[in-house]
Length: 551
Image 1 (cartoon, rainbow, N blue to C red):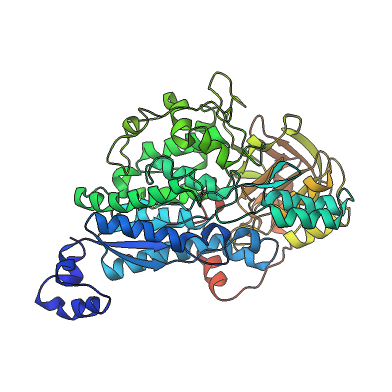
Image 2 (image 1 turned 45 degrees about the horizontal axis):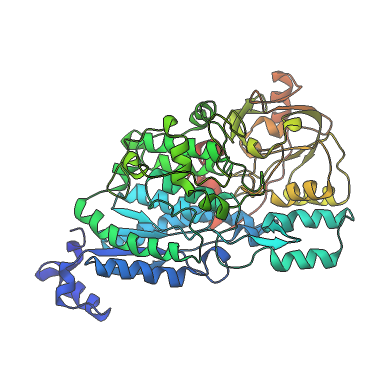
């Protein structure tokens, strides 16, 4: 066992002495050491229940003959970090999560790992760590929150963000906003729609790194507790089988995960996270770039209309059979020979899977959209690519053309929106918010929600930053290269005519190549001064089209 490095032989007597201080007895040194990466914190709703959930994981590990060792990672709530400097740390925190799991595992020589993530950056961060370490690993994602209820309709965090815009335009009162604020997020779990956290949980399950139905089982359900116990038992078996992440997260598994993402119309942030996870397996021949997203989008239809694109929640998806039912529906588009953490192939796992028939999951013969729910756009504004959650774009807004209104920060753009400076038909441009420019590539949920809530019609938004998984409308993110790396978005001026064509995957400005080149050379962009971790991050982070990884 890997843990023999710290527990076997005469020379490890000092190490065993320290382990005995932690409560280990003689026979425990013959058992596999299982590290549990727990992202519990009591300021993030998606994580407040993980202190209890981890005890069920430990129960399973002990029952199977392993020794559990829990350690913590960080977790940032994107909702709380939104629309201030704190959001600069959100994407960057993914790399800290990776490094924490790597450091704890290498320092203590765990034989296996159970990962317990929930929210946006923690799930991909732990997947990256699993890929990097290649130690037998299984995931117990924290699970979705129950949807809130307001006026007999589902409500969630995005409902509240958009309501702020509604208040600004006089559509609701402060009292109504307060009522909504108090009921939209009723308790523990990741936000109830198909936003980034839940999308990445679905990716995890499809990759084969969590047990079937884990992604959609609600945070406080008995089913989640059962899955936690089962996962604890299963990791000990995986150690004995030497079933590693590289055996599971193959090229075919990544293509399956992207196919699922397209079928559900998941968060645009997967275009950052999936390539970043794949990068950790590059030596195994795995890749997942924007071209692959584009290729699979053309092959896999969008078959479920989940919030923010529709009103159905993760609870509704779970009731309709969860991810196994989704994968069964698109089985013809998948490689089902891939191995999963169950020790069985995906084909074997899906043998009894079925759609229960509550109407959430459509058939391939009757899809929501013929193409996948994410679309890659390229053109003279995004030569290396950009991404939009096309599943959440109305049909009449798939093609837009209008004058640019250009801002060099999220704050300036938000101020302009609430000052009613944005007009119908404008294309809002928010730049200098990319991985390097922000730094940290902030989410633009506040401006997108304000536009939706205020009811400003036919407005597009493009940015070298990114969007919340809860964003809806023609919002084009991850424009690459970013402004601070000399990308064409740096050339834009107020009044430039921008054309967004989601149908055909194009993003262009009516400027010649020569004019763009000259403007970039003379661009006077603000350099946002940062220190500490963000300064280190800025110097090392790659472009969004490469997954914003550290090089």
